[in-house]
Each structure stands twice: as structure tokens, then as C-alpha cells.
Image 1: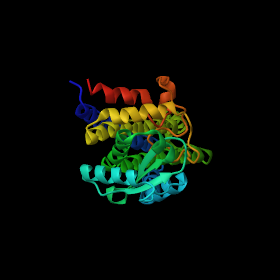
Image 2: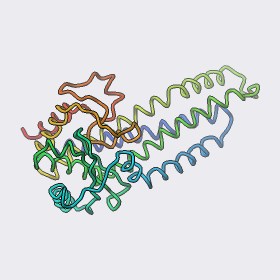
Image 3: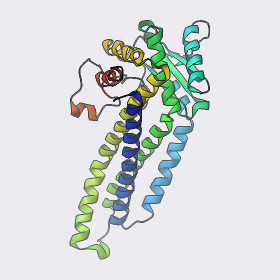
Image 4: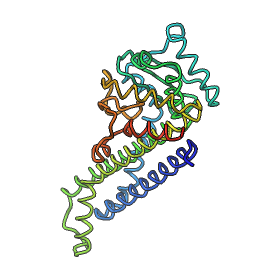
Length: 301
């Protein structure tokens, strides 16, 4: 029988299977490029540079996201109910209370950020507070706390590092072809085929890597939905909140592509009650709200 636990376990398995495939693809692409160019040092150099960039962005991820979304601390008096809900659910989840922020924006949305539970932050928009009742708001906060507890920031940061690595090494490969001399002892049919494969990979791999990153992001949303519902023991609270968000097709005022994936719902996408075409879904940072609601409500039957 389908339950929230089976949804959670399934999403965890699928996420890490996709993540493992991502690592294998990254290493394979790096090896093809370094072998084709006869430059063994290319792979470790690119990996080190990308990791350093990733560590920097991971360490300051909360500050970057909060600044870019114009979030401000949620005053304990003005937003008393919000702070109480975060307090209670953090205790229930066994997590330190995250810093609480508000984004003064009429579009209903929320996000969590921070490199670990001790440095986490949760933000909601004023638009979200206006349209949700207490049970629905608890569902949203539980979802965001689940992102903190599931260490989703770590997963998404590593995914960004891998995408950056592929883009970096693909660019290096194509630039190096302009300076390629002769062909040395690899002037044979096999080498020519490998070179062609390298060029195709250089052109397509950044797109493929981006699609894999987006797929990981969508799986983490399903996982946070299931984890949040387990936390409140009331799946319909989050399902109802998502339905209200879908009905308000207003985009956020302050956002950018770099942080779109942290929001509860895609801040640029005008969501509808229907499901997106499969091709459009490939390039989406979030799964369709209709699918998320169906998954939550199917566990109540």
C-alpha cells in the first residue's frame, strides 16, 4: 500500500541513483577530453578549480540567496504566528530553529537556505502569509524544514559544482582545438572518431548536465513534500497550500535564475492546475504542482 514512507524512500533512491550517474558522466567526459587532447593534467585541474568555486558558493549560500531575494528578518512582534510555527516544527523535527525571514512580495512562495541545520534560514513571502491558513502554512514550513534536515543545500551545491565542471572543461576542450598542432602519433581512424566524439560531447554535455541538475532538483522537491507531510502528519495541509499557490499565477518581483531552485515553486513559471508537457518539464526547476498534490493526496486514501 502506498504511504508517505514509500514515497520518501523511492525519492531518496532515485535522487542518489541520478546523482551517481551524474558523477560517472562527469568523470567519463573529463577522461575523453583529456585523452583526446593528450593533456592528462586537464581533468584534475578542472576538478580542483570547480570544487574551489563550489566550496565558496556553498559557504556563503545563505547570504547570497537572502541578499538576492531581498529577504528581511521576520520581526517577532509583527510576524509572531510565523515565528511560533517555525519554533514548534523545528522542535518536532529535532532541528535548531533556523533564522526566519520575510520577503515583501505579493506572490505566494517560500524558500530554505543554509549550508547545514546550524546555519539555516527560512523565508516566506508576505503574499504567502495572506492566502494560507495555519495548517497550510505549517505544511509549507515543514516542507522547507525538510530541505534543511535532508541537507538539500549540500546536494544542490555539489550538483552545481558538477555542472560548472562540465561547462568549464567543455569550454577548455573547444578552445584547445584551435591551438591543436598536427595530431602527433594519434593520426588514425580511431583517434579521429574519438575527436569527433569529444566535439559532440563538448557541445551537448553542458545541456545534458543542466538537465540532470534540474532532475535532481525536482526529486528533492518530491522528497521534501513527503518529509514535510510526515512532520505535520497532515499531508492535505501542504497539498492545499500548493493548490492555492497554483491559483495565484503571479511571478516574484525579486528573483533570478541562480536561485530559482530554492523556492517552494518556480518563481518565474506561471503554474496551472494541469500538467506540463514532458519536454517543458525537462527544463523546469520544480515538478508540476498537480503532480505534487496528487502524490500527497494519494497517501490519504
